[in-house]
Image 1 (spheres, rainbow over the protein chains, first blue to last red):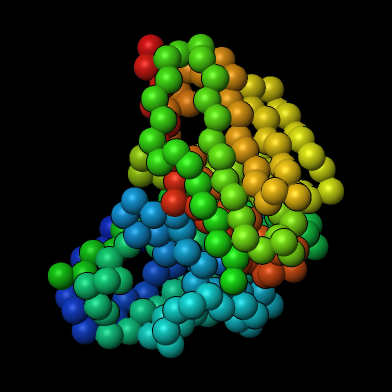
Image 2: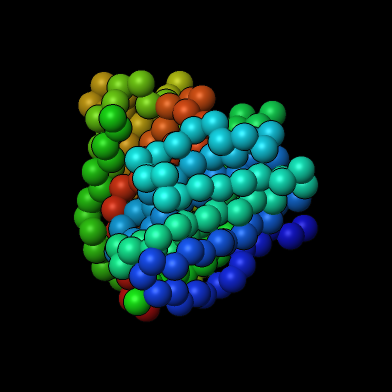
Amino acid sequence: DAGVTQSPTHLIKTRGQQVTLRCSPKSGHDTVSWYQQALGQGPQFIFQYYEEEERQRGNFPDRFSGHQFPNYSSELNVNALLLGDSALYLCASSLESGGGDYGYTFGSGTRLTVV
Amino acid sequence: GENVEQHPSTLSVQEGDSAVIKCTYSDSASNYFPWYKQELGKGPQLIIDIRSNVGEKKDQRIAVTLNKTAKHFSLHITETQPEDSAVYFCAASIRGSQGNLIFGKGTKLSVKP
C-alpha cells in the first residue's frame, strides 16, 4: 500500500522563478494538505484541498497556490520565489469521512532551495 | 490564533531510560493533539494522538497525557532504544479546522547506547 508520494525530492530554483511541486495521496485518501517546514522548525500549514477546492488556508501570501485533481493528487505552485521560500514542503493526506483532521499521513517532502 | 510551545528543544538520554517531552497550547478550543516523529530525510510520522475527551492514552512504550485545565500535554517514552532517536513534534488543532495543525518547534531526542 503506497503512502504519500511527493516529487521531486530536491529542487534548486533562482529568485523570481516559479515552481510546481506534486503530491499523490495515500491510497484511499481524498484530502490533501500542504505544509512548509523551515530548517529547525515545525511544519506550518499552507492550505488544504478537498473535492478539488481549497477550503482552508494558513498565513501564506497569494504567491502560494494549489490545485487538486479528480484522482485526488495535488500540486503546490509558488510564484516569484524569494530566498525565504527555501524549505521542506510536505504534503499530508487524510480521509474526510474518517474524520478529516485525524490520522494525517505525510510524505517525505520536497526540499526547495532558492538561490 | 493557536500557539504551541514545546520543551525541551534537545533531550539526551541513556538507552533504557525514560524521556518526557512537554507542550502547552493557548487556544482552549483545541481538541486534538497528535505527536509526530521525524527521522532525517523523512516526513513526520504519526506515533500517537489524543482527543480532548481523554486524559491519557498508551501504546506499548509510548504514552500521552493531557491536562485541559492547564492546557498542556506530554509525551512519555519508556525503555528508550537507539532507534527512538529522532525529532519529535507535538501539534494541536480544533476539530473541523480542515488541516490547520499547529506544530511545536520540535524536540531532538538522542538515545545513547
